[in-house]
Length: 377
Image (cartoon, rainbow, N blue to C red):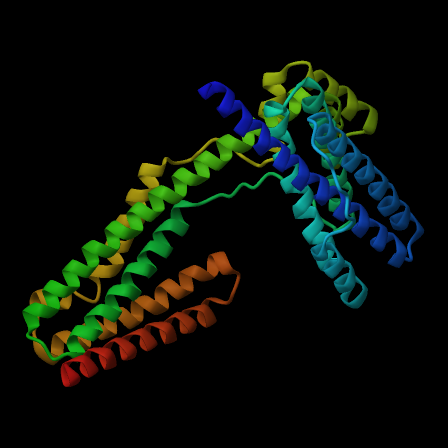
């Protein structure tokens, strides 16, 4: 009985997913037709019209799957959301809508690939495989029209040792500088400044270190997921993947016939094909670090940055320690701002000044808050 109930819940969940996707396909067909109506370029118009027809077919396939389960299907046409986007398209052009639909096609590919594993029967699984293949084609067509490249259902990111050091250092410096300024503003005894600063440094280093670890771990998990999805795509649609690989080779300057032969030879070995697709298409290489190392690097960099505004209070007291802490912190803010310019592309001096102003703002705000607290509480 428990198994029957579990299966029933599973089937209902699947039918809900099919209904949701059916409405998405109806909406997509409607929007592609609106794009075709407003498009002046004949080639693009034909592409949109062809995409709309395929989306009609997807909707019909999903409707058939639902009806085979014994449920009734009432098709009410495009949703209010789709009608809003049609209005938006007419008013503001297709640029934003194309990007949105590209993301939507990417999400659909992921979802349909999951449904190929959990369909109610082999016929439904085969139908979702077909829709997944054609959605991939749609996404690639939209990528060309939107001036994008790569497959939108894959999302990968990269980190870097130097970036972790700079951003960790920056966070520790700014956060603890504000804390120390607030304690100074409260006019407390010197040892309270030291204790507060050290506690803040430890807390911030642990926080940033754990965040760095979890971020790297999440990226690792995402990469594993994307690689597994690519493995499924190679198994489900080898012909399409072969074509994509041939295009990648051609983009590198290899003659079309030779590129196709190379892709065909590569796809004969699924493991080699996966390795090549992961590197060439997803841009995922061998990891240069581990989540633990990334967490340690970020945590240590944060601790170093956080200790700068506290260090003078180990050796000095009074206004001498305060002004030295302020000077060191402000110079460090300028230096870390200049270093950030390597990642932001901005000028070194401009980036340094921006960070200097941020540091000054943090110090003034922290000091005023500390002063306000001691006056009114």
